[in-house]
Image: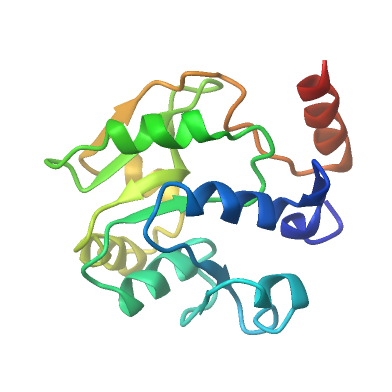
Length: 178
């Protein structure tokens, strides 16, 4: 993308602010995961933050840091680069979470694989994640594929499309407006 995806403007606000508003409507508390360099960035300072305690493990750094901070909490993990996500998508995930599986995730509308960055990670799953990291697996999707993950279908196939390039962002905004 060439710039911080959390700070991209969408619907008159940063993608981060939009996501935090959505999460605030569906959770008791919402946190922004930051690395050490981002912690004092002005937009992130507007929200409660959990600073990564791990390095070189990608998104798992934020997930494990959150679990370390609040080990008894179930975690609704959502990436900030999902411009099409809406309240209905989050409600569907929450309403269909499994009490019998460590993870609940949407099935990707693109490849049928789990969507790990719009998923619920139940309390106590840090042990599972750490075992994978210790074995060299740092990809959240691979972890959910290899785990007992409860998968649910997306209501809107575009709801979890992420943006990785300026063209992706322009396309998602143009399509949403039409």
